Length: 300
Image (cartoon, rainbow, N blue to C red; front, side):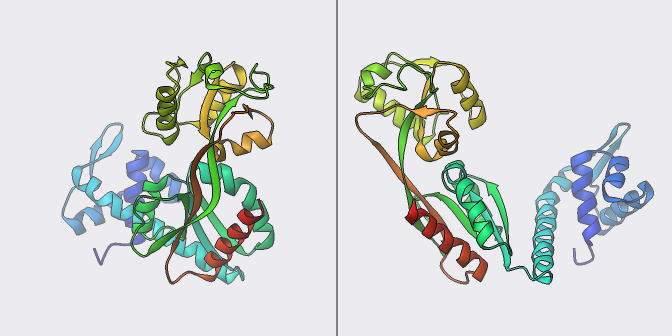
C-alpha cells in the first residue's frame, strides 16, 4: 500500500460510483487507456482483481468493496487538508467542520450561521446534517471539530456536551386550521384531529404515544410517515392536519409564518440542544464558533 498513489484511490472510488471506464475518465480528465492502466497497476500491486468487466461496464469484486472505505477516507482526508491549506494561504482564520442534527440545523444554525459568517468571514464552515450516532462516527474518524445535538446517553471519550438552547414539544398545524386561533386547546380537542405521525423510534413519536395513553385516546392518523421533514411540512400546509414535533425542528417554518402552533394549556418540555466539543486541543476557529453560538443562545 505504500506504493499506492492518490490517482489509484480516485479511480477506484469513481469506477465504483460510475460503473464505466469511459465516464470515470471523463469525470477526472484522463484518457480511457490511462484509467485502465492505473487500475491494472493497482490490481498488480495488491495481487487481486478489483472489478469484474462486462459489456455494460464494470462492477466491484468483494476485494474492491473491502478496500473502498479506506480509499474514500483517504480522499476525504486529503480534500479536507487541501481546503484547510488553501484557506490558510488566503489568510483565512481556519476551517471548522460541523455536523448538526435536524433540530440543531433548524433551531439554531439556520439563524445563527449568517450572523456568525458576518462576524468571522475568514472562518471556513463545513456544515452537514447528521444525527447523534453519525456525529459519533465522524468524531471517531476525526472528521469534525464541532457537533450540535441533544445530550447523548454517553459522550465520546475526550469530548463533552454543553447545553445551550432549551426546547419543548409543540403541536403544529396550518394557520387556517380551526384550532389555530383557539386560546386554549385541550387534548380532548386534539383527540378528534387527524395526525401526521413521526417515525417509530423518534423522540416525538415516543412522546406522542405517551400522551395518547395519558389522555386515553386513539388518534386518527394520516397514512404518510416519513423522516423527510419537507414532506411532512408540505402535508401540513395543504391539509387540515396536526403533528407533534420538537419546537426547534419547527422554528424555521414558524418564523416564515408557513405553519403555526396550537396554544396548549401545559408545556411539554424536551431535552435542550447543545454543543459537542473536544475537551482539549480546540483550534482558535472552533473556539470562536463555539463562543459565538453560546452568546447567540444567551440572547435568544
